[in-house]
Length: 65
Image 1 (spheres, helix red, strand yellow):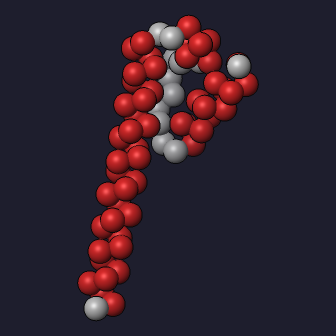
Image 2 (cartoon, rainbow, N blue to C red):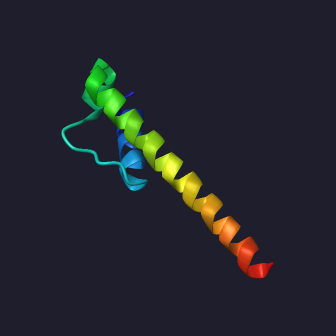
């Protein structure tokens, strides 16, 4: 279990989430404020990535006609 939670935190950090003062133990213990903060960051990064992808695709269509 500890390895999966560590992998989840490392993956979140790799996509741009700010991982400070949170460890696998906190996720396992279900500390709501830390879990919700991490989830919010993952959603935010995902949303920004989707919008950037859509903007890039739209920009390509406009340039290429």
